[in-house]
Length: 478
Image 1 (tube, one colour):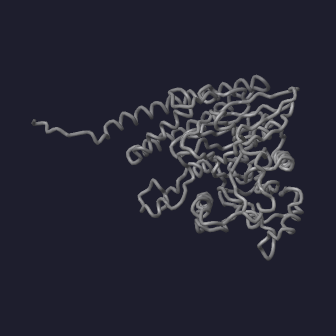
Image 2 (tube, one colour):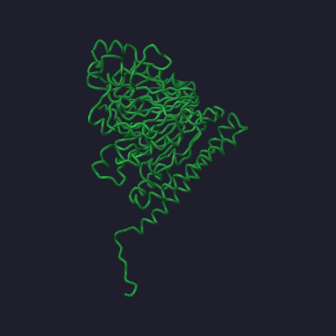
Image 3 (tube, one colour):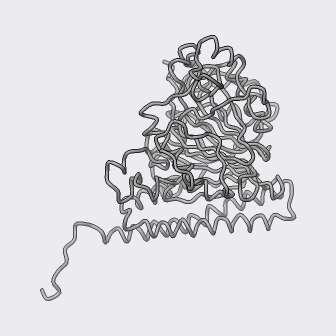
């Protein structure tokens, strides 16, 4: 019996153009959230493939079938550890052409649009999408085109928002019905935050530099009377949703991301009209994006870990969650040579309590602590190390958060020093020698972080043993 693809990624995404960042990087970033608190993932490098015999991809989730091209680039991925049960879901990574892709941000078309172009049960779903696209594209724009052709041929069984970037451009693509989609280039001086709702607004069909779209989408909307507006062509209004659930589950996360980057602008966290394309007066850093993705409405009345009243604290779904399986920032720097410019900032713990560890994408493998995640807790893998530490911190939040914050803050400094030192050491390297060096640097950062994270975890456990309620203070005179 064919299984229906599970729509796992109830995520939050951030995209930033190169003129909006502090160092000229392009950034795409996302929290990969699943239905369950534990869906173990691993991080590995898939080798390049050349002149392979004819092969067929078959999804074990919905039965989707397609030929696999004979040639593909090397690429990084963060798939599920239990592929047999959960499916692949490769989710995020770079290929060796310095193209970044993150898939997907779950989005939902409205019933009116879906009535005329329903979802295709055995179409190209999230579990297969990254694997069938990232190894075969040469730019962000090419990624949109390539995926658009696949959707035209096979259809989609779900709504998906897909992030692409290269050194020059950042694109966000929303697939909302069985065959229709729109993609918008994030302006170089702008950013966008999305959270499980159709986000793209006004579409310019005569602006191919900034918009791409499915064949026949304008006629589809006209013929089926789907545009509710008197003027304009607002993709969000035509294809998206605006429900009570959205205003508690989705829009507040967009509001908070925009609040972090534009604190001077006052908006309603439940507004259905929050803008998609935004600009801010200050340059955006990797750390800013990390803060958004690791946040839980910090310093507001909506913080579930804060001191507020329960009615407000638990009103909205937070951004970082215990079921965030990985959080990532995919950075393409323009201030260093291209062969060392792609950095995968990966967080395998609950992002609120764990650091984003940098990995150079020009590498041939990842440390076994990342590439060989077991299905149950162990003392070796990175996934379980960071999740164990996260659980301990949250279990005694008031007592442990200050020490955890100090650890994350120190890690940020050390990890950025690591990147700078590694780049300095790579100054005179190129080709295979550079790739080998950067691969070794990726292994070294894993070892360094294991040491400090294990020490923190041990310290917290020792401290936690003094916090038991099963205690009694004896009178010294007895």
